Length: 342
Ligand SMILES: NC(=O)c1ccc[n+]([C@@H]2O[C@H](COP(=O)([O-])OP(=O)(O)OC[C@H]3O[C@@H](n4cnc5c(N)ncnc54)[C@H](O)[C@@H]3O)[C@@H](O)[C@H]2O)c1
Image (tube, rainbow, N blue to C red):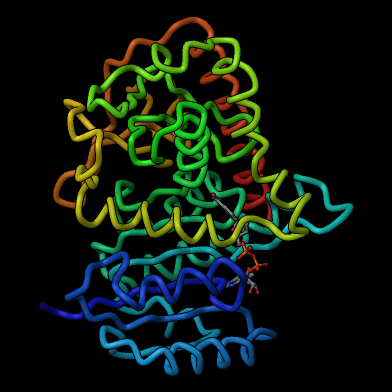
C-alpha cells in the first residue's frame, strides 16, 4: 500500500500534541498504512515544533515513515493527501469577534491558496481552527481547483458531547447511542438534535432516544444548552480549551471519512447510520442557504459523503436550524468583506 502524506497545522499547539501521536500510531488511517507526517506552525514556534518532532521519533512508531516540521507553506502543502487545519489565531482577551474573523480569514485565504497550488487535487481537508465553518468556506473558495466536497469542518466533538450526555442519562455505553445530529455552526448557536437518534438498551432493542429518555423538557432544554456551552465550561475549568476530546473527535471524523462510518457498535441494528460534518451547503437541503459550511447529517461511501435528506423537521427544530444558519451567513459576509477590502 502506498504511503500517505498527512499535514497537521498548529502542530506545536495543544490539540496537535494529542492528535499527532494518535495519527502516527495508526488510529486514524489503519494499522497497515504508513504515513509521512507534515507539521506546520508559525516561525516563532519552530523550536517547539522540533521538540514535538523529537518526541515523535522517540515513540519508535513503525507506521511513521517520515516527519517533516516546517514553517513554509510550499513544503507543508506539497503533494499532501490529507490536511488537518488546526492552527488558527486564538481569541485574546478584549478581542472582538469581528477582529478574530478578520485575522482568521487572512490565514485561511493563504492556506486555501497553498492547497490550490501545492496539494494533490484529491486532498481531503478538515478545518478545526475557529471559527471553523467560516474558515473552511474561505479555504475552499481560495482553492478552486479542489472539489468543494473535499472540504469539511469539525462538529464531531459537539456530536460526541451530545452522544455522551444522552448515554450517561440513559445508563448505556457511549457507542450505544447513534444518529445524533449537530446542525449548523460550531458555536453556541449549533443545534444538537436527538429527535432522530437511537439508543440500544441492555436487552438489545434499538429505540428512539426521546422514547427511552422520557424527558422532553430535558432534551429540549438543559441537554441542548449543556452541549452548546460545553466548550466554554471546559475553558472555565481548565483555563485552556478542549484538546484531548478535540483530538479524539478529529480522529473519529477523519477515520469515518476515510473508511466509512464504523457500524460495529450496538446500533448496528439501525437501518442507516450517519454522522455530523460541517460541509458545503448548495441550498438544496432542508432550506439552508447556499454558500455556507453547515453541519448536516451525512452518510459516507468511498471517501465521499452524502447529506441525509428527508428527515422530518418540526417547528422548534426549524427555528433552531435557521438561527444557526443566519449566524453563518453573517460570518461569511463579514469574512468576505474583510478579504475584498484587504
Ligand atoms: N471545531 C472544534 O470542534 C474545535 C474544538 C477545539 C478547538 N478548536 C479550535 O482549534 C484551534 C486550535 O486549538 P489549540 O487548543 O490547539 O490551540 P493552541 O493555541 O494550543 O495551538 C494553536 C497553534 O496554531 C498555531 N498557529 C497559529 N496560526 C497559525 C498559522 N497561520 N499556521 C499554522 N499554525 C498556526 C499556533 O502557533 C499554535 O501553535 C483553535 O482555533 C480552537 O478554537 C476547534
